[in-house]
Image (cartoon, rainbow, N blue to C red; front, side, top):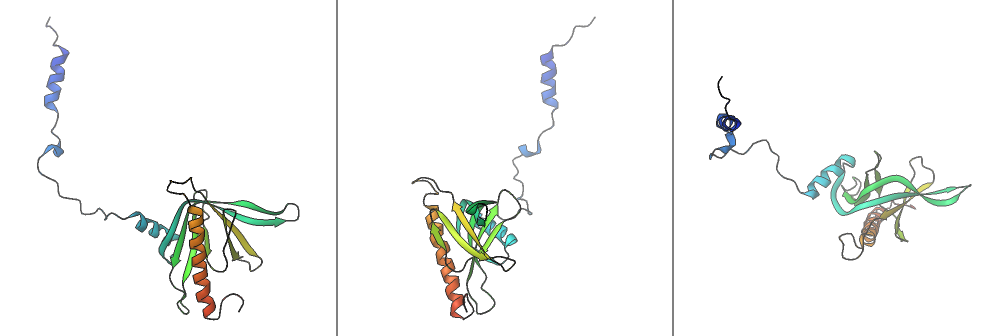
Length: 193
């Protein structure tokens, strides 16, 4: 009977039989030609917003997290704020000028993390900031009563990156709405004309 070979010998043999890796060479590989150039976060955000609102030309401000409330009034419950089911990143956007007279246009967009319905509201008229809510008004699609929306923006304590986020974005929204309203009313076709 022949003696068995030790197992260490088999492991030693298998190490010599392994194929060499093509990446172990000293010759550098040419760079791939089909890799797109790197884009900044601002460019990526703008391209995403343009899919939802094609007239967007720039992003003025971003709040990482906002919740959209709608003001409702029923005979049973009276007036109340209710969550609309829309929450996510808030963007304040400038849009292409209106074709008539080249007026400035701005919108607030909240890309919804909880569903498929995003919040897009053109800015004009008076914007209120009360008790931590930015209050927007817009005409309903049916032409009836106006919709009243409340935007709550998350912010942390002083020293964090989101400190003061509500007040800063409230001021930007108010300024953009005032610019859009001023331009519209100066041409004589704004609200109340």
